[in-house]
Image 1 (cartoon, rainbow, N blue to C red):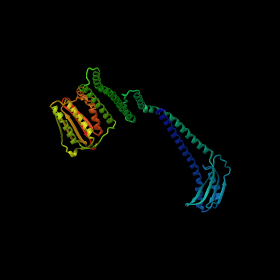
Image 2: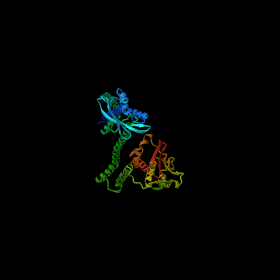
Image 3: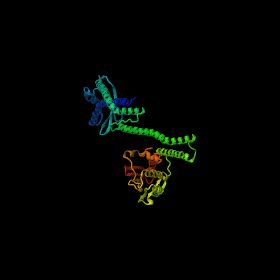
Image 4: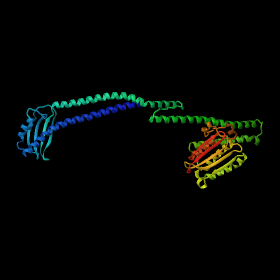
Length: 449
């Protein structure tokens, strides 16, 4: 059953239920009014008998009073339905028992007893047997019929109006749901670029916005998967082609199997091994399963060691490499995996050396972050990166300068690995660059990692 149908059925059931409750309350209220009317008429006898007792201070002559006064006055009154009246004293002794002559009113026979009170003390009981007049019964039945007819008519009319309005309202109400279902069907059919873009601020709008974000992520994931397959195939093609070519030359006897001939093969095998290792580490980091051996480490000491390790290469390339910080050693301790963070800094320094010309500068700094934790910077005065490349710089196999990256022997995974390693520590890595003026990478790590 569709949601719209369920809403209409629920609305109809609710109307019928409310109508039934209204009818029941009206019926009980009207019935109670009639009963109260009859009881009040009969209680009047008890009040008059109490007045009689008050005047005479006894029940002497009560029989004549009933015949002449009470029943005589009530012959033509609204209490004409009395057929039999009995009076008992305070000790339940029968004082009077009178039958009303020529009284054969048709109706419902009912006997009730009412206490006779004098100055708060019960001095007797009056027992009245009467027949509710047929006219009163007919009036009561007429009222009930009117209530029943009015209630039934109201239920029918209200149901028709409510169902018509409900059909219109539910159509508007469930329209976004239909749009969402159509979008789901398009995604099911393979259209991952489906966007609902519902202009509503209710729960349907929240679902639609979540759906749009989901399809965007699905599309990006599918694109990444497609690109990954293509990139891996592309990265494998070059070394495999070189290995295959060298082996064919050796097999054909064109080249001897000497170290000089096998060296290119060894280089490409090493490159393939590095590519596979990088892919493995990256895949572990992306699914949150990268093993981290965290311990308390001084970032100042770690950065000093790394920059010292690269000083020889900097001198060879005629590049000025410096490490600067105003943080003392005691304030630079953080909970990190030193091997992973070292790999991050090494990847960034490798990029800096690749793009910084002779007489250029590479600066590594360490300072306290304004948001807590420590902030590392790796800055160079290299060629810089075009703005259009910056959003994709941390993607797998992305290269802003394809030719130079391949000449340096990179796999195109260094920055992607750096990003995942930093985020695995609960930190962030960002990049800022200006073409022709250099690049600056910022790495923020929390104190507790």
